[in-house]
Amino acid sequence: MVTRDGPGSEESCIWRRARDRAADTWDRAAALPLEVGDRMLERTELVKLVDGPILDAGCATGVLTRMLARRYPRVPLFALDPAQRMLRRARNAVPRMKRAIASLTGVAPHWVCGDAAHLPMSAGSLAFIWSNLMLQTLTDPAAVFSEWHRVLKPGGLVMFSTLGPDSLRELRIAFAAADRSVHVQSFIDMHDLGDMLVHAGFADPVMDMEAITLTYPSAVALLHELRELGSVVAHVDRNRGLMGKAGWARMIGALESDVPECRICLTFEIVYGHAWKPGQDPSRMLNGTQVIRVHRGRPR
Image (spheres, helix red, strand yellow):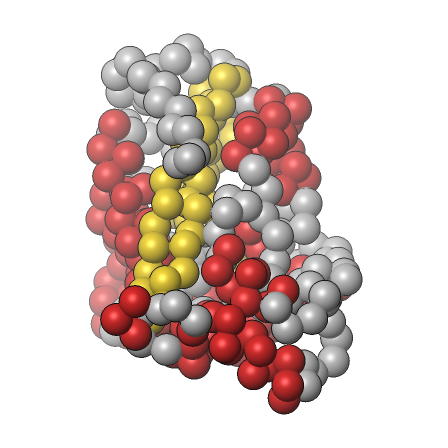
């Protein structure tokens, strides 16, 4: 496992520590990341020909990394995450004998601990960058897109998912009933992400979104799952102290008020994007299939 850390802001350090703490619990709480990852994998059905190495940016415990390896078995695969304990768990999830065989045959993923905005790859060395629900943890996605553009070869593809601004709205409303501090992370609109891709040099990005709603038996179960995923608030204006008992009770009460059938709903706005580095017709996928752009409006 290679460790390559770039300079990190206070917010990025908070995220990295949270992911390290969640290494042992992430798998059992990862229903949403795995569901979104499965949907992204369906989109790669059109990307059958990958001429060069792949980067899984934000690989967590490596579940989807191994799926990518099966989808593209003869292509070098790099798996990057900022949390060393996450990467150690990802590597150790495969039995030692299988890891040894994979290393001998050259199909084992290369595990890299580092910053997505400071990749330890040379310019033009990658063909495909995949990133599932990682961008929302970063303080400067524009810098990450510029770095991805640097390491992609001409005609290379980036495909990602992230959270949009309507995510966690039920939790945001509940905390607002408790106090005026920032308790829920804010997220970037998909149109702004598309503009960032263009500014970074990518050609004709395609963005779309969908809403996924998860249900929980109680507010405690909801908050417990978010904690097991390593979800934290890294905003500079966040409340750095503990919420008092009265405020916590108001938040729980607001979250559980008017709950049908004792089920609490939590909405996630999932933003998908893909774009090419110029060098290939950006209106076609890597296997020549024509792209039809679908822009899904927000529900009224």
